[in-house]
Amino acid sequence: MTTGTDARLDRIGTDGNYVIVPMDHGITLGPVTGLKDIESTIDAVTRGGADAVLTQKGIAPRVHENKNEKGYIVHLNASTSIGPDSNDKRRTGTVEDAIRVGADAVSFHINVGSNHEPDQITQLSEVTSEAARYGIPVLAMAYARGPDVDGADPEALGHAVRLAEEVGADVVKTGYSGDADSFEHVCESTRLPVVIAGGSKGTDRETISMVRGAMDAGGAGISMGRSIFQHEDPEAIATAVAGVVHDDLSVDEALETAGLALEA
Image 1 (tube, rainbow, N blue to C red):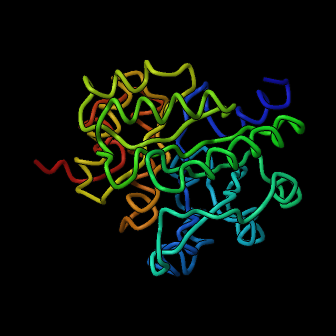
Image 2: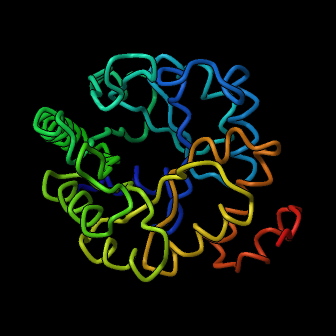
């Protein structure tokens, strides 16, 4: 890891922990709630405590004036929900493209266990090599996802995060195994910082409890999209998540600090 990589990791996190809000879903799902006026959403989540936001390169002009001097990550592959195979992620940009539009880091999605895994391993390896030449950090979104794979199995998740380290990523995002005890194995499977995906949108308590569990297991934060940007108050839920990740708050403390209901 170079000085430049270290410096840019500081721009997308705080003291080695990360609250990242991906908003690249416009390719995957279309202009869903929270993304039509993406400018307002970016402003809200970064005011709430997100360290960085993530989009595809074409959205960069809508990001910079609204991110409140927080970090910016450009995602480099994609698929759509209406295409023949949503696991078949294809390249949408290069590291140079990301640098050109002002990114502090890049990200790349790989489905470990899918039919497309071989090509995606090759592509992720190419991205990490490209990024290393420029001192750009790589967030690998390494999911356990395929026809015979349980996406919450800690063994499969541990394999996915280790793959990310083996091919040169700097931070790895993966699914949550469901509880802190099992997720500890996932975090111990790599020396990379491990951040969790949001999964299906649940109640505020469910979301914050998941974040608390991941942190208790040794995780380094979250990379959480719809649970934050589609929330009725994106700023508040970002505040609650950041309270757990950065201030070590309990679930109740985080909800209360953010002004969210302490529902059972």
